[in-house]
Image 1 (cartoon, rainbow, N blue to C red):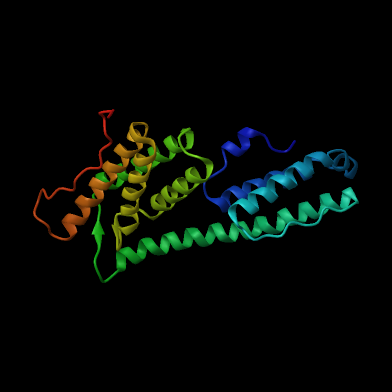
Image 2 (spheres, helix red, strand yellow):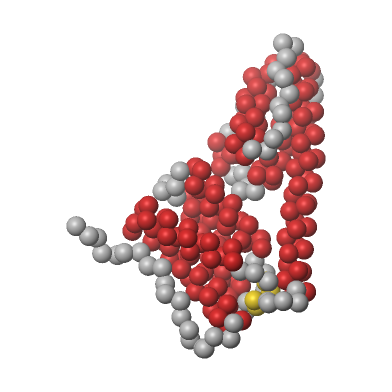
Length: 232
């Protein structure tokens, strides 16, 4: 088969980057089989890859229409190969567009004439570290179902990419507080490692906002806390 479990476990969180990896793997397999007879004999692997790509597209709502499975196996293989080449190019455009938008957002924050939030280098690095730790913990956690895990990982990835030293808005980071409340409500004490990291991020965001708003020094934000005491 073209794919194994390890391949899917190591896919990027970004759906376009993940889709591109799947397509490139199918294309690579196609060229590794130099003779049409080899491809014909490997037909079951192509069908398995077809099903995996189709499920991926449907799961992420990407809107691509898979080619038909023909009675002629060679035609099916060639159609799948061409389809992967086409959407690989499209994925590349979308990845480049996202990178451009992230870069533009960074410079919008720098050149914005309005209100600017400025992180210290230490706070900026610490938030990046905490988000990375959260992503790793959520990826390996058994607490979350697949859909909840994907939503959280996608949000964290977007936040990590949007985090810059100067920002015109930090509203999206406050959404993490709501996520922490949901996780705490669903999983209680088991959620403490996640809630603790989000609480630290919230404190840094609050400190940055308080400085920008010129609030009195030491104005504090109540921490999110998981309940260490079990009730009966």
